Length: 271
Image (tube, rainbow, N blue to C red; front, side, top):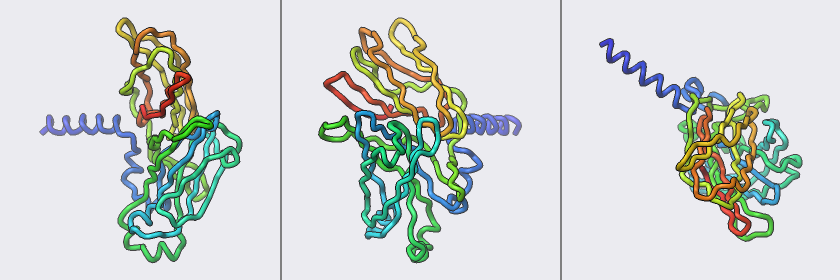
């Protein structure tokens, strides 16, 4: 019996340390918090265009047009609110072209997406809405200014919402420190921009590691303020062969958005 209890305690401890969600908040229904939750999305307007495909959850679920209010909260690279944009639409999806007037002139940052329905709509679908909660996981498209076609990525892990006083809150939590190694290689003569979003109300520290067949080299240490979205640039690292890159951190989920560019070729993808 003692061995069984010990194993259960150890398993729970491993689960607790690995879980990206706050255990307390994850047991609460979002209806009790009075809102929906959003992934944490990145935007960049520094020689790039950013668009976002926002979903109308209830319209998609019922397969009929239903008017909603899309609400986008923009957050700068210090974790401070820098703009809010609202628009009504009954379409299944709304395409948002992000511009500097929405972001308060901020060129690189993060944003969330939330929706609200009129009281009569909520009443009409009350029995349906009482059985699930909305989590917004739309797609962001990026392209260089003047080029054709966007590259799309989904949002970074967030679980973000705003309370009744419009304060940003999160269902995420810090994990124990770990090393995250993405499934791509750093190529010679390429530039890389990594965009990380911090979904918690504490600072997050990142140690970047460059790994080749001979050694592991510490590239740089970085820090993200609470709820900040930052761009970290690595230009021409002076490598002769493909290398791996890793980062040591206690992010809830270690992924970021990667921009890869060699002057002629450009791509964006999730790490």
